[in-house]
Image (cartoon, rainbow, N blue to C red; front, side):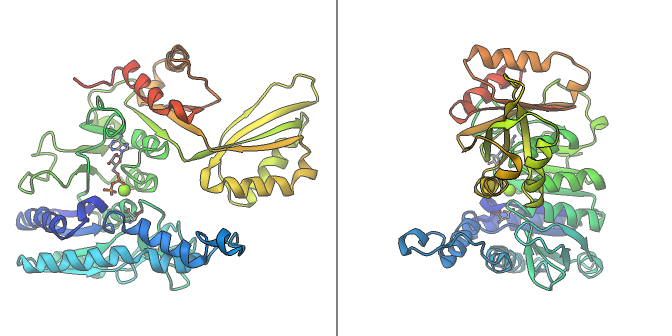
Length: 430
Ligand code: ADP
Ligand code: ASP
Ligand code: MG
């Protein structure tokens, strides 16, 4: 008997028929004698609906019409109270459907398990999961159907884990339960060399290392939430990404079900390694440019200090060479959602920093090539830059890690750049 965590995303639980299909996958594992915890997302589109109701209630959507100032932030604790409700519905429905099929099951909300988080409402981090009760229920033959995306903060209020957070709920639960595997069922049949909805020639990877998956996720491949990959890597949880649209009688174990899904695992468990394993892209960053900043020691600290105090993460940074030795231009990126706040912070700090002009733009995209093979292969960056140049794509900023090269480009060229790099690094499938 194994202890399994199975997670189903929004498309997989989009209506009752799909929930019945999910129940059939769960029943297969249950009938095979495994102790099962299931983590569910809200029905597809539901979380977006709940978020837009929160915004409407606060007046964000009608603010201009009513002439009211809605720029002040709404109460994130109430956002969490509302937005977490989608998972409450699907967990209860799946427990009911399982029961109707003769499988013992009950739903667990985050606070019932409990999944403990910090107080960073709307993007809380899990600080611990008390698994004794839920584990006893599972080992006693009851399927534990858990609401993903939610936990309970020290202030005794519901907290959510950031968009896509059910992946993190599942991996964290698997780690706490010391589960044998965490299966992430989604609407694609594994992790691809790039988003298969953008590049038709993308192909499924049988295996991908934690490190590569972490870079893929953090550079925009939304198939797994970044935090879930961090946790899987930290705790060594084997994660199998597979499709809930596979026939429910397909075996669930990667050891017996050769060719099913993508196993996210340690690098040394992967035999064949490409130099580049995947291409990711993100459109949710914005560019900030400070023109005519004094070119002298301490200026970068005066720019980035206040941004960090405002909890705004800065990603890529480029400082141009100063032409006159006195002033220079500084460009960097932040999450689009933080752009307005970043501009406000920099306007308030204008006298202290000293700059000529300030600009913000959202029509940019970041495209990244990722692969552990880059550690031992030189020249990947050069190849990448010349392929983009041949297509007339201008690079506005570059950042690198040991296993990743990212470029910032005009958003209009994002798909062309992804396709170009996919072909360049030999990733186009047959
Ligand atoms: P779920 O609702 O199951 O959590 P998501 O929509 O969050 O599913 O993630 C699955 C989606 O991720 C796919 O539909 C696909 O378009 C997208 N995606 C982006 N990059 C990749 C990739 N490299 N491999 C697979 N899917 C990817
Ligand atoms: N329902 C949440 C969201 O849409 C969490 C998840 O699906 O992972 O972001
Ligand atoms: Mg998701």
